Length: 495
Ligand code: HEC
Ligand code: HEC
Ligand code: HEC
Ligand code: HEC
Ligand code: HEC
Image 1 (cartoon, rainbow, N blue to C red):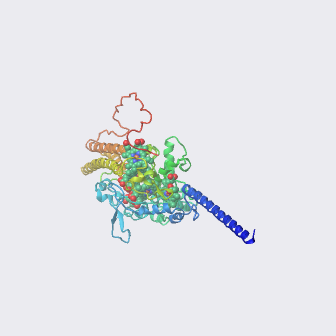
Image 2: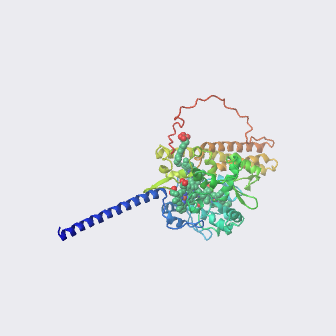
Image 3: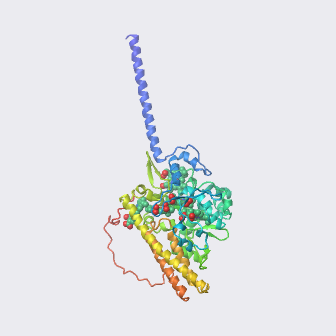
């Protein structure tokens, strides 16, 4: 074998080995890549920055989670639906209030609300709610701030507070909460910077959902104790699906400020149905204000989304707030939760059609049908309360005293709170249609009974529990339906 041939063969062999090695490296790289992608789908983030328990700025979280951050920023969007969504109304900025856009005034939409809230700050300024991005500025600049000296407690649901509370309480969340509650609003305002952010709902190291709001930590503990579960710790004991509702229940609830410490309290110690809440306010005597036209010690309900939703079919079926308001979406290989929290009617495809085999038009129509019916009842119930207020005002003018109007005042307090409970709930009945109708029906009855009580000082009201002897349904033996047919024809196909 001559030397040149040998050299050529060696070179060929070397080349082949090199190519084989290259291929092997390539294959390995591909395997690594596939592995990484699988990992990515499961645990979709690259740790670009280290997040700690003091990282408040969502832009920093956004470096690790750009997709969630992009959607989160879209809560500035304003789109109207028939009864919800949000719309921007242009306004001329002033030195006091630099906003160039606000939400629609509900008082202008429905002046009866002014009669409802006569003598209370809400009769001065009350608007449609809009996206999370606006929560801090809308609270800072509402005219309600000028009518009443608002406390630092207000901040609880309008800002990112986990870090400020901890700082203020020297590491103790509850201490910080207690301190801020007692500050004047303007002082507390200086301690916060962002609207609700990532750290308010997520643990920075595990990304798990968590409740950070003392109002909910304490409220749910009281509620569970009422159900026989003592010392409930929501962050340790709730299921993942429950947490997908509880993080929203931190703020979308009825509340009041308890005692001179202005402790934010969710009135759930007797349960979360409206009767339970009204009983709570009787047992723990509380009024939000004295009605200017009737002298009654009245209450105002605020956004009881959590409470109403809990009376509805979706809660009963284990569907969470996040299922409809933060539905899953695909971004390439990733499945993420839509952090653009908004009206599900702007997103029916992902919010509803994952579970319901109805068309988008059909689903929207079903919602509107529920809302139209609720709206009609709400209007009649509001008229009834306004009529009662009118009668009481006239009776006062004619010289009737507190003693004469005692029963009428109690009926006003209840009827008004019940109408408000549906009115202030932001789904116009959708979260629990039958419950909304039931509440409005009782409210109408109470308002009309109030009118009777104005005319007749010894009138005996039918409050609740109802004093009407209930006619019991005849108990019949019911044949259970054959297996598999229990869900009937709703078309729901929950995953
Ligand atoms: C089955 C789906 C579903 C669930 C679950 C659900 N919602 Fe809703 N929600 C809706 C629909 C539909 C509306 C009506 C939207 C509209 O009128 O534009 C609505 C309206 C709202 C609104 C007013 C939105 C707006 O744009 O005016 C808020 C706030 C809200 N829900 C919060 C919650 C909270 C908090 C929970 C859980 C406690 C919850 N929702 C559970 C479907 C749902
Ligand atoms: C328990 C949580 C919570 C507390 C405490 C709270 N808010 Fe809110 N606030 C909300 C939620 C949820 C909304 C959006 C739903 C709505 O407007 O019905 C809202 C909406 C608002 C809005 C916009 C709509 C409107 O009413 O004009 C203003 C302004 C506001 N709050 C001011 C205040 C002030 C002032 C305080 C203190 C007296 C306060 N909030 C305390 C949860 C809270
Ligand atoms: C820290 C308190 C807080 C938490 C937590 C919170 N919200 Fe809100 N939410 C608010 C406030 C306050 C507003 C009204 C802001 C405004 O009007 O300026 C609001 C507004 C909304 C709106 C109206 C959006 C629009 O475009 O009109 C929806 C829908 C909503 N929230 C749903 C949810 C859901 C679902 C969750 C849980 C995933 C949640 N919120 C968690 C306080 C909160
Ligand atoms: C009002 C509460 C709330 C806020 C504020 C919030 N998230 Fe979430 N986030 C959720 C919910 C609910 C889920 C669904 C979790 C689940 O199903 O276990 C979620 C899921 C996630 C996930 C897991 C992957 C996914 O998309 O399902 C990431 C990552 C995430 N959020 C990042 C962020 C970042 C970054 C921010 C701030 C820019 C943020 N979140 C703000 C409620 C919130
Ligand atoms: C995670 C699954 C899930 C999502 C998301 C969901 N639903 Fe449902 N829905 C259910 C279940 C379960 C029921 C209970 C009825 C049943 O089991 O058939 C139900 C019941 C209903 C009903 C009452 C049907 C009846 O026959 O009484 C309506 C209306 C409805 N859903 C509308 C909606 C709308 C609108 C949306 C989106 C905003 C939505 N749902 C989102 C699972 C879901």
